[in-house]
Image (cartoon, rainbow, N blue to C red):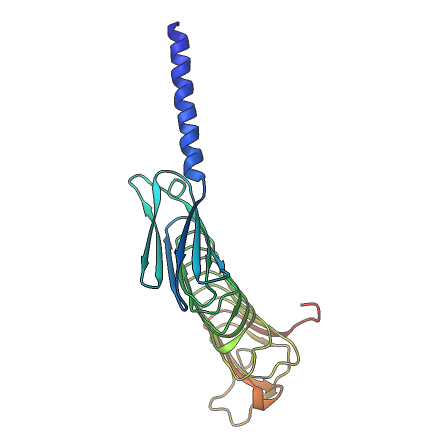
Length: 290
């Protein structure tokens, strides 16, 4: 065999070996845990997405797609709690250290998810749900009778169809959108991100939307019952709903920067407070198609 042929075979072997290694690394790995009622699940994933949906029984199934051999999945079952962590090896970066998780967990489980830059998704659960990330995109939907806690730096947050919830969102600069979110407490605090609320504010709840410099927009139907107060120190305040002004206000309203009024039935009204230092606040009527 000539030297050139030997060199070609050797190079081919290296290429094939690399391809097989990549294929093996990217093949999904599946873990299964049996748990009891009111179980717990925590997932810490520096790079990559995490999606949690309800299982059909008292078990947790973790399907992990690992990008390379620079990262491995550590797992532990402590009592009734499943702990999953992406363990980065030396030299791992955002690409080689990526793991994407698809998880099934009992609907009543307490969930804690953390990712630096991947998508965090949770749906159809009714246990406590906590999602944390720096630039992570957060998507929460179809949650009922649960606490939902979200903390991000600049990732966008979308929360949809949450009923009878306790919702708290803390964001530095990411935009936050709430669509059909009701509960005893719904609170969003953002430094510079915009806040959009679409819905009717439920019955007898407390809604507090605050942004230092971001705009706040509340889009509500005419059937809403709420006592609404809006203040912007340096921004503008617009009210397209024509609220009934309150009497005997504790302070003087600044034209174009403050309004305080009510709409609907007082007996089932929610309390709504919209505050921004320099951002605009807009309360407007929802169109029939929205």
